[in-house]
Amino acid sequence: MTTYILRRLLLIIPTLFGITLLTFLLVRLAPGNAALLKGGGGEGGGRAMTAEQRLATIKLYGLDKPPLVAYVDWVGRIARLDLGESWIDHRSVTAKIGERIGLTASIAGSALVLSYLIAIPLGVTAALRRGQGIDRVLTFILFLLYSIPNFAAALLLILFVAGGDYLNLLPMYGINSINASEMGTWGWIWDRILHMILPVVCLTYASLASISRYARVSMLEVLGQDFLRTARAKGLSERVVILRHALRNALIPLITIFTLELPVLIGGSVIIETIFSLPGMGQLMLQSLENRDNPTIMGITVLAALVTLGSYLIADILYVVVDPRMKYE
Image (cartoon, rainbow, N blue to C red; front, side, top):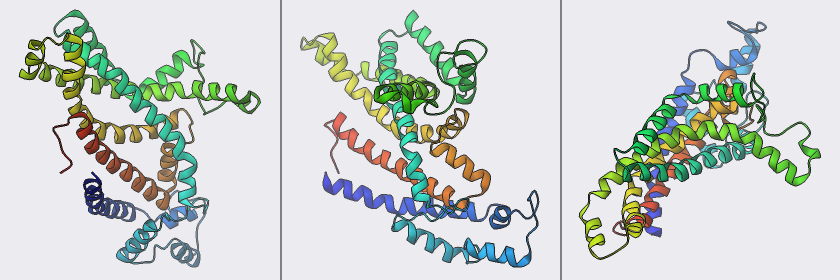
């Protein structure tokens, strides 16, 4: 197993190299001069810059270096876990991401766990009741959920249950109330949970809908296999046949979906964190894009790429856990 993991980690290196190169080129070749925009000159700028100020700003941000030299310098800093300094407040990009990554990880992680915990039983139930009323009702509801964009769902939830024109059951923005520090430990925790409900729901429902459909299709394929008929012929109860044999084999495609859902949830946090005013990585990414803060943009992109590549490694390990027939080869 150790050899397999080391081999997979080595394969991540060329992939990460390609991602860093593409990220650097997209940011570096984007229209407009980032230093000029940062300094306030040019179209839409607040004040004009002299030629000397413009050159000094370009040199300050390293935009005078040839692209190859700048890329090598940036990759070298990444290898030292140094993502550079923000062009907005000149703080360390690593520190800025570190302040926000916990919130984004908790929201995306909660949404991913809830999606699987709810979607798998729904998919299995629909497969076992194929063509019946419960299958049709679940299919309709899940397709309806999947068709609603998360930003639209967020606005509707705010309107109906979070201080809009109807109910006021949950907070509509922020990670804690203004007086959260006065609530005590358990009060603070409960207040944080209430603030996280709507963002997590908005990230969960679409993933839940897609995963449950995959679970249904995968379960239907497994239910027609010969080994299940053999298990029933041996006298095993239907519960054991379904949970121990059928479900275990049906989970294999769902592990593959895990590698696709995690990046989607991370990307969806950009919109959700902005709508609910959550100081996470998604909000930081949007602010950096608006301000052309290139070091922060590239730092967040590289971190998201590492998380995605790590999810592929976790999926490969889970394949063997779920299916003993697979080996670390």
